Image 1 (cartoon, rainbow, N blue to C red):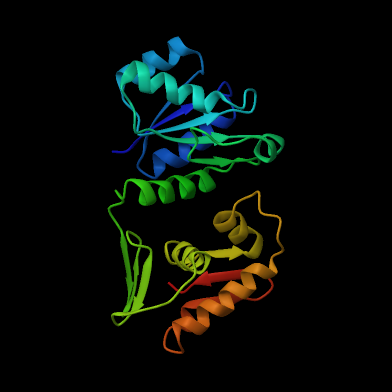
Image 2 (cartoon, rainbow, N blue to C red; image 1 turned 180 degrees about the horizontal axis):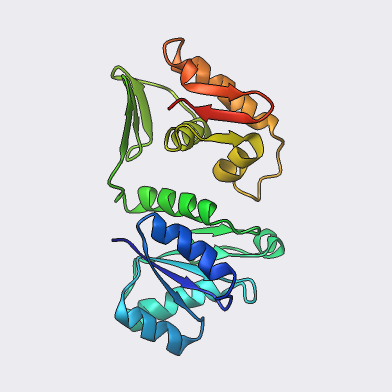
Length: 224
């Protein structure tokens, strides 16, 4: 079971939301206050693979936690996701951080970012291939193919396809797709989604373009 350490002072509101989503997805989640003694005590019980650090009060806390756990607990390959304010995200540099989120913090977004980060860096997901008929999405190598023939996709086209295919049957608004694929810090318009969906359909060819359905006045879903 993959292990996540959630570091935050907000143990009444933020922690239960994020912890609940991750636990239901199969992660083992430990919550800790950011003080050194508390961190070392918790980590001594269960060495985490990923740290999610609430840095809204102190922007460099994620890097500090990473240094502490590397030196004191010999955890030199930790992945670190920082929770930041919008102002911090626009101003600071990113040493020691692998990814970040800005408010509103969503357990579903954290789960998506965490999964993608693990796929990219550790390649440890157990369901790394999605197969729908002769359409194959290889999440280990970031490739898609139809009947063995590779589909030439941009990274964002692939991400839209992967996200919809891993949530088959669910309807997502354009705003939700922007948030999940581009992130909450993306300031482009929702037309970006329509353009990528149109390109995806053309590359999936007539035999498979129906898999991405338009839900009128709402958004898109991948056929279940």
